[in-house]
Length: 513
Image 1 (cartoon, rainbow, N blue to C red):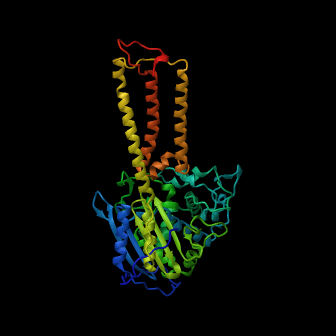
Image 2 (cartoon, rainbow, N blue to C red):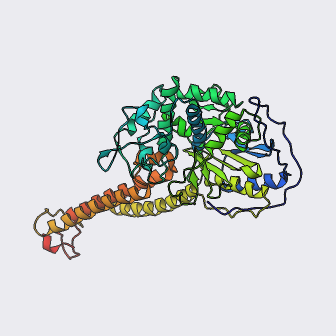
Image 3 (cartoon, helix red, strand yellow):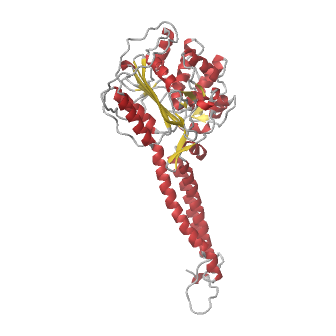
């Protein structure tokens, strides 16, 4: 995690109507009231969105039992000129996992399942192995990302919008070799929660989407739904991703089978209610409050992640337990939620572009609320990757143009007998063999480089997530190597002749340059 940052002392109270109680009982703890310098918040968010080149975003801040700030920024649809607002819907990405985690814990409370049960009790055909032997993975291990399922399993999620997409996704995982023994270590793999979504479906006897919709409505979040059940798609912001230096509209593939892990949609207004639920300041039943509190309990039986945080049921929890957060990323959307329950503070940020600045805005706003210094902005990976790709594309293009210029001149040189055909034989074949080896080695090296750079993900998956310039660069690299070999072959078969007086005659292999 980045260091906490901060800004101005917060003044001026902006109150929004308190949310209606979702159920009787379970009185919340006394609310903390926080003064909000709305000008400072607005200036900070707008400055960061400009750096992120984010077309649109929405922000919500809660304090105590109140939503104290909510606002939309920029455009939900640039072409149509539709502004983003606090009711605009955005894909959540991986912040969807906390909703799925809560649903699983609700079923556990009803004794419909046990977290220590092997997943095969509910999905008998799901086969996983470790070091060539069958592996037993529990629901708790899937919940806490200690199943050993590799991160690269992301590539197995099929593009599908059908009713059976969730089962197809889990079936695509079946037969996977685990990276580590189940329960031994933390390793984030988004598909873990798709498996849990299918368990919810099998146990509840209804589709995951139907079960989740019922849960969300019970909590008063009527505008938060699985993407496939969205009835007013015009309310969903258009998604964008960086390409050639600017955000471009991008229609991402449909991954309905990934809904439990990343494809709920919501608005800033609804996320405000979600954060109040998490803080325990909304009036709900004691049973529901207990489930929510349980969802905040991380698995500390394994080591933390690289930032020192532990994983709970869809939440990263700091080692001291004071802060809970989660980032969400889809190919053309991103989100970030952060809470400090003991201080009764929460922030939610939604954006219609995949950007690290969504995370930075959330962190910065929390620092503002706590009257700390503002954090230095961290570099956004995608624009950096886009810039690097554009530079390399430019260099490769220059070399290919130079090579093309020389290749175009070869036919004319043949007509003027400045080049002649020399049969491929003798010692000249050694040069051809060397060129073939160099070309093959270059293509193999590019493949290794791409595998390392993309964490083993296939190019088709990288094309969905990365800036379009990255794919252009990959194709340009392969094209350059191929054209370089063809250029060498043309020059090798038709070498230039030595300058001499008088008419030029075909020369032997020993006389060519």
